[in-house]
Length: 108
Image (cartoon, rainbow, N blue to C red; front, side, top):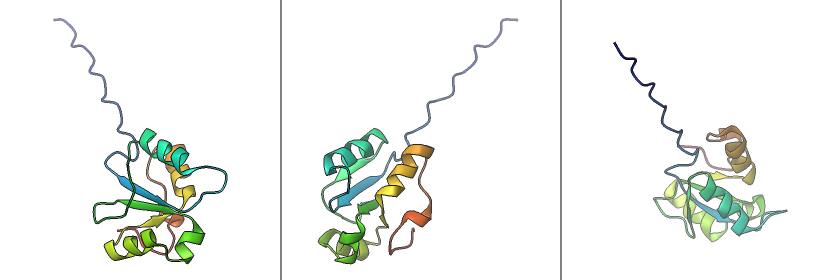
């Protein structure tokens, strides 16, 4: 009886696959375009504004504390506000970062 060909496992989805992520503020040591490129490379769709369909808002502490327009929209729509460190952790681990890197709002 011939052997069955081993089935290859499907490649794992990128860690942020299916996420729509907006950014807010000036990030120290990097630019918005670099952050957005990182997001896309991890499977996310970037957004220029925060809507009910936004999964996360990556914001600086300064933008969060000043209650910027995007932070207000995130609060209104129940969108978790996370730090750039959250993205770093997602990139390093290959999965969503831990809740401790959120600022101000609880993860749903």
